[in-house]
Image (cartoon, rainbow, N blue to C red):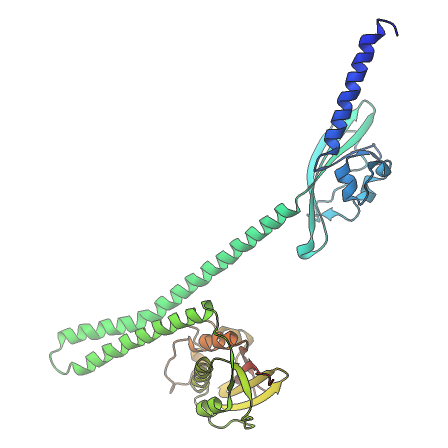
Length: 365
């Protein structure tokens, strides 16, 4: 080795060591890194990318088409596409970012793909960095879902507050008017005082039912216990067709079940103007109770709306029936669901409104 060659050889050795360290650093990156030829064949890939392809050795990926290695991934934006190859030959360097996804629903995986076209004289190469952003995307999705849930909850609370204010406005106005009249009159104040007491009692009952409904929906249910349903049905509805089996028991709370049947009976009479007809059947592990009213059937939208707070279908209400608070059916449904059952409204074969209650049957040991 000549003296003149020694500095050059030292420089080459230093560059080799630096390149080795650089190669080790790129190979240890958590992100996948790929260098591809002009035609899309892999020239080099780090260990993170090879493992994402299901192989341990990066060497086995050399000369394989990048498109084939990423064929299971698709653009998150279906309209975007991601045609990286072939490289354009009539433009300068360019780069971009695109998100890819694989799988469906909650098992979906996400990649963020950064690409850049580089040109060196007559040749071109593609450098691609792939970052797993699955956790970040899932966290963002969860945040958006929580924001949507809070938004809907706020809208419901605002609607509830508006409905409650509307319900309280009438008795307050009546009570205020009666007090004004009472202040101007010197004779026979008893009727005015009675009217004021009536409206104030009405407000008190309304607030009490609102509070109770909120507690039903927020507080956990008490442990369910077997209870005979025949005595409660006969007490609230009288005749049941066919007569219930005296040994038939359902799971729940006796006080809450009695309140549920009371609300059902009250609303059936309020809608139909007469005593309802009740039928009973069993469907596997559930008891099916149907309360048939004399009211004409409702449209599909109203069959759902009547379970919303303060909803009153005045065009279906008989003139002889007192106006309700619009809370009876929401309370009845909340009670049914606390006992593991449900309450819906439908139209029977005769196109009359009916309420269908399902409750879990207590299984004999």
